[in-house]
Length: 445
Image (cartoon, rainbow, N blue to C red; front, side):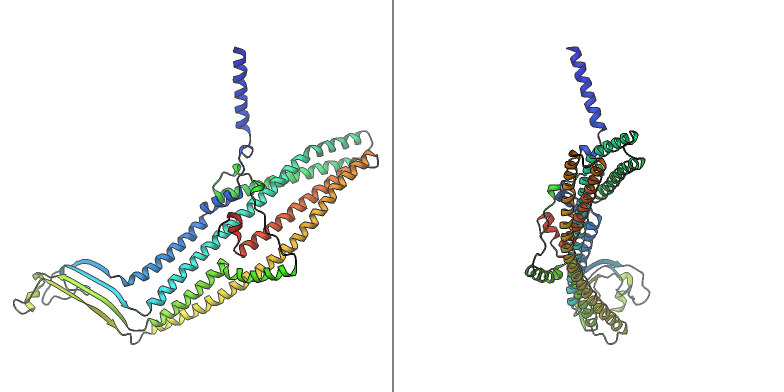
């Protein structure tokens, strides 16, 4: 019984040691694409910056709107007076005073308020565009990592067979069946396999580090789950579908967050120019003041005896008629130029997105055809391996023919993976351009 206890304790210790020595990637649980994207949206600093821009635009709107709310100031104008009590910074010397002022009629405030509102909408659109950028970067990094993980698994599966092939050829060289050249070729095939494994491992490590920076997860704990990637939409297959797709593209271009932001900014600049032109019109402000005066400032010496009083108040309006303001006229002209520039930038953004969307549509169609070709080539390469195996059984093929067939199949598999990922990249970019990326990944609008 004592011996059994010792054996059990030793076994437990060995198991713990093995677990501790395993790589973190082996112990890690797969992370779904949706979880990765949600973490990236919460963790990314660019999303926080975009949210702060929205808050800033909202505060700028409230600042202008609050011009209609009286600004109240409490203070005192303490000082000694010789002769008639002169004003201190525009107010009579007093022990205590309260002033209030607000805008009543300012023609320029209304367009300025609408401009601030449009800038807030533009900031929201920029925030949405930045959000789509984070989603796109995360999705592509996740998909590429999934590609390299699959390739790495396949290469590790092929490694023992390549080593056995190299050893078998080495024996044939020793026996004089094969030449030294064939032995060198076998070693080259194995070296190429090791190179591809190192390349795949390095690419996977870099992508895990990128996803770690995006999500805040430890790089060693990131492992993809193929089933979590939603199916990408099908491309147009006939002329009618292509026409419908192009019509939808025009609408999608106008709903693109980058285009919306540029258009809303142009409208805001137009309203700012309107406000600058209206700044030369008459204005009316509400004004009120209360002051507690004291005899230390000689007020009683300049009033009819007995008419001086300590408590004084004034309530009314301040009307201003601007007669000549060359600086304001120049400011309005500069605002007009900014409005024209913003409109041109909005038109350029719309044209750029429209052209990019059309290019991505055609790229998806082309990459889809290239993927079909790569699939067929890989299928042929796989069938060629079976054919060589059959020929070897009938002694009409040798190890070198089998090695060449396997090498060709591996090359076709890598080519198929690369083309498939490029197709996914084009489709994801197209989804972002048409404003459907977040709906595809998260199922939300």
